[in-house]
Image (tube, rainbow, N blue to C red):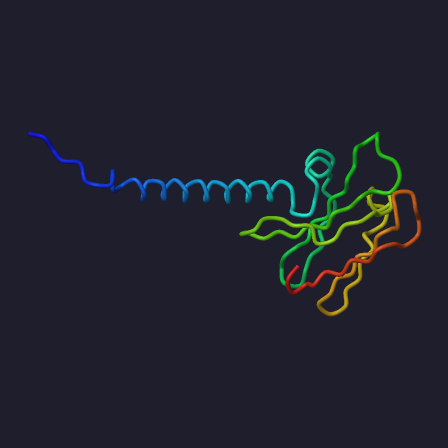
Length: 146
């Protein structure tokens, strides 16, 4: 007894491809989420992953914290330290909310990170460059949605 094949090929192929597309999409999202948990959005991979060192955390009024990281290559480093201020989110992972140079005294903990709060805004003051003591960029962070 022979069975007849339906016209137009196998009718179950389209759903199988659709399932594979969904599986690949979920795999891609999972991979990106894992990557942004290791290297925050806004930071370059090699400096952050290989040379970052965790610094102090900044508590926020809503119970969350911002984490400070310094770019420190150890004995190979000289001058001011590039610094990232990082916010974390359960869904999207970590992201850089402010970055710039700070004094080596901030890096080793002799001085605190130059910040100030005004209502719902946190201001972080950075230095102009790697070998400069002049004030440079000022980053503002909205504390309602860091």
